Image (cartoon, rainbow, N blue to C red; front, side):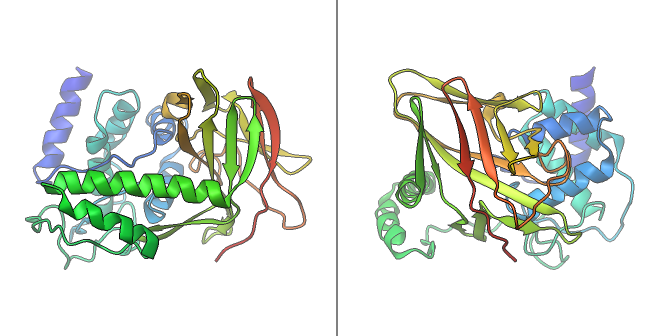
Amino acid sequence: MKALLAGVASVLLLTSMVASVDANNVPDWVKNNAGWWAAGQIDDTAFVSGVQYMIENGIINVPSTTRSSGTSDTIPSWVKNNAGWWADGTLTENEFVNALQYLIKMGIMKVSASAVSDDGASKSQYQEAPKETTKPQSSGNADLDEMLVKCQGGENKREIRECEKTIKEEYKLKTYMNDGEKYQLGNVAIYYVADWKEETRKGVKEYNNIAYTATGQALLNLQILVQNTGTANETLMCTSPSICNYTVWDGGKKWVNSGSDFTSGNIVLKPGQAKFANILWGPAIGYGSYENFEYDSGKDYYLRISEPFGKLDLPLNLVVVP
C-alpha cells in the first residue's frame, strides 16, 4: 500500500515536472532528518530550515525551479510521506528532490535566486531543456584546466563528463593531502586543512571554519580526508548520537553529531583508498547537531575521534568567515 501511495503522489507531482532530477549529491545523512521529520520527531520548521541551508550552500543540488503564481504555507502530507519513504529506501532520491522542488515552487521553502533559479523568467525543468554543449568550462585553476583539456577528446558527452569527474576528484585529493596536517591513527591517516576552500562551477565552497546564519547561529562544516594505509578494510562509524565516534570538543563541553554523510552510518575504506568525510554542526537536528552548536573565539576547539583503531583530539584552528 505504501508503495502504491508513493507512486500516486509521484505521478501527481510529475504531471507538472517533465524531466527527471539528478540527485546524486544528496548526502546520505540527510535521510536521518527526513526520517525523523516524517515520524514527527522534529517539526516542519526545523526540517525546512535545515534543507534551506543545504540548498543555499550547495550540499543538496536542486535544478532550476520556477515559482508558481499560487503560493501556500502548508506542507502537503504526501511530501512528508515521500521524505519518510525515501529515508527507508522505498523511494528514489529523485523523488525526494522533486518534493523539495514542489516546496520551492509553492513558496513554502524560500531560497535565493543564486541557489535555485526561481524568478519566474528563467528556464526551469518544467520547460524544454537546452541542448548540452561540450565546450570546456574554466574551473578557475590553471593547473586543473590544463589537465581537463585532454578530456575533450572523448567520444561522447558522458565519456567527457566521467573523465572530468575523475581528474577533479584526483586533483582535490592530492591538493588536500599536500596542504593538510596529517595524523596517523593505526592504519588510518587523517588529513585536515584549516579554512579549506574548494572551487566549483557554482562558486567557492568553504569548510573547516565558522560561519553564522542570519539569526546568529554558528555553523561548523567540517571536511577531513581519511586514507587507509593498511592491508585490510577499515571502518569509520557515525550512525546516530549514541553511535558516533566523532564529536566537537572545546576542552570542557562536547557536541554530539546526529548524522553525517557517512554511507549508511559508516565509511568503509579499502586498503590504499582515500575518501572525504563531511560532518556538520549547527542548530539542533536540522543541521546535523544533537544540540545547538556554540562558538567562543576565546576557546580552542577539537574534533574528538574515538575509533577502535585509535583516539585523537584534532585541533581545528577555526576562523570566522563572512
